[in-house]
Length: 280
Image (tube, rainbow, N blue to C red; front, side, top):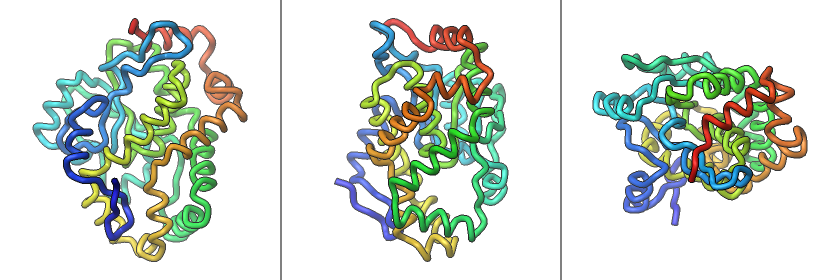
C-alpha cells in the first residue's frame, strides 16, 4: 500500500519498488527515472501481433544520467531522444540533456507550459479543486498544441525502423504519458493495457522522490498548495480512461487526431504500423 511523503507524493515499500523496477517493462539506466519499454503489449486490432520491443522507450529527464547509465543507454541501442519539455522549463530547472556520443537529442516541445508563479498557482488551484477536470484540461491542451511534436516523432517511426528512440519530459508522466497513449492506442493496444502502462509511473518515479520533493520545496507556490501538488503528482487509472474517451469523442480516435493535427497520410500510418507491430 502506498504511503506519502510530507510533500504529499505517494511512496511505496522498498521491496515493492525494487521488484517493479527490476521487471519489464522497466529497464535499468542509472540516473534516468521512470524509463521503460513501450513493447510487448498485445494489439487488439492486428491479430497475433504485439508492439515491437526494444525499439521505443519512455522516461523522465535524462539530465542526471551517470557514466554507467550512459553505458546502459548505449546498450539499449537508442539512437535518438525526443525531448517534449518546454524551453523555459529546461532553463528554469537547469536540466539540459546530456551529450551522449552516438545519440541525437531532438527538441520536440509538445505544449508551451508556463512556469511563472502566477501560472503555477492557477494550475495548482485547478488540481486542488477538481483533479479529474484539471488533468483532462491539461491533456486536451497537449493534444491541441502537440501536432508538430507528434508528427516529428511519427516520421521517425516511419522512416527509421532500425534506430530505436526514446521520448521524455520531466517526470515521464503527463506529456510522455499522453504521447505513449496515442502511440499505443494507434497500434490497437487495449484501454486496459494503456491505463496499466500509465499508472506504472507512480512506481517509476520512486527513485526520484528526494529530487522531486526538493524541487517542490524550493518553490513557495508548491508549499502554499500542497493538496494541489499531491493531486498533480497522481497517475490514476481514471485519468487515462478520461483521456482515451476524450480522444474518441473529439477526434473519433487517434487516426482522426493524426489526420487533423499532422500531415501524415494513410500510407504513412500503414508503414508505421508495419514498423512497430511484430508477431506475438
